[in-house]
Length: 116
Image 1 (cartoon, rainbow, N blue to C red):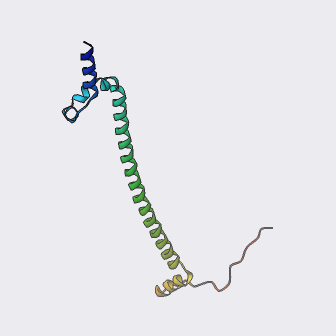
Image 2 (image 1 turned 90 degrees about the vertical axis):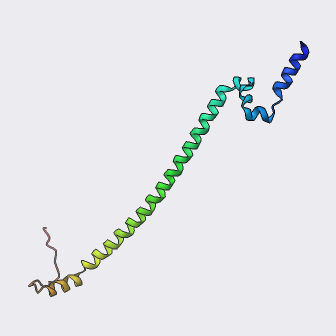
Image 3 (image 1 turned 180 degrees about the vertical axis):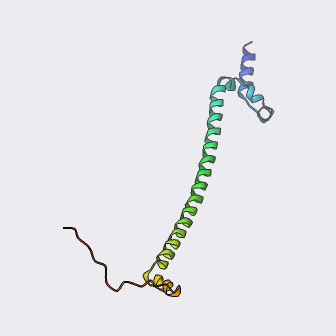
């Protein structure tokens, strides 16, 4: 009976490729004792992979938004410079002259009225 225990222990400790590929290794006592830990590790691995994937997706979205923001800033700058160019006094005077309007530029400078 003593020799049977030794052979059972020796055979249970010795794992072969056949037992790994066949799935017999999952029936070993080690896996039964550590089942909860192995499930926890698998859940954490899945959580880690999911978290990394979401982070990568957010980084891609942030880069897209940065490019869009840059484009919008350049567009706003272009429109602002166009507005400044159209609202110059010389351009307004040219426009009024081409419309044959009775409006004229002021010949006297503006002055400040004080209420003392």
